Length: 186
Image (cartoon, rainbow, N blue to C red):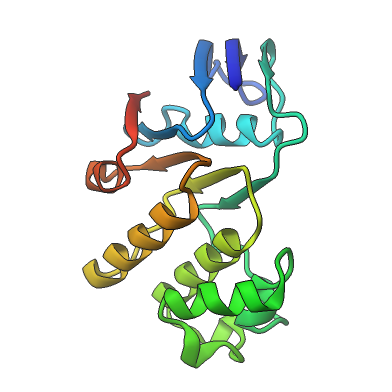
C-alpha cells in the first residue's frame, strides 16, 4: 500500500502546488489524476516515483517497488533503435513482443528521429510496458495518438497493468473509463 500523508510540495519561490494532500493506493488499484494544467498531476506522479521530495508530510510504501513510466515527453535515446530503447530495462524478447503488439514491428531497427510523433509515443509506451514493474505511471501517455492507436494502447496498458498499481494523469476521462480507473480531481 502506498500512502501520501499531508503532503505539501511547491517549486522554489512559488506557492505550493499541493497542500496537505492525502492519497492511498492499494495493490492492483488504478487511479486517474484529472484536472486542468497546473493543478499538480505531474507533481503527484514525480513525488510517487521519488523524483521529488515533499516539503512536508510523507510518502510511504514505495520502498522496493519497481516503477515504470511514460513522461509527457518521450525521453527516447536518439542514438538507439526503437528496440534498443525498449530493451534498456527489459529482456529483448519482451521488448520486441510489446512493440509488435503496439504496431511498431516494422520500425524496430529505426532511430527515434526517423519516427512520426505517434510512433515515438508508442515506442515510449512500449519501453514502459516491457519493463517488469509493480507500479505503472503514465503522464499524458496517449497524447497525439489517433483513435485506433489509442484504442490499441489502452488494451495493451490494461493487459500489462493487470494486478499492478496504475496511476495516470490525463485530460481525457475516456482513457480512465476504458482502464476502469477511479478518478481523483486535482
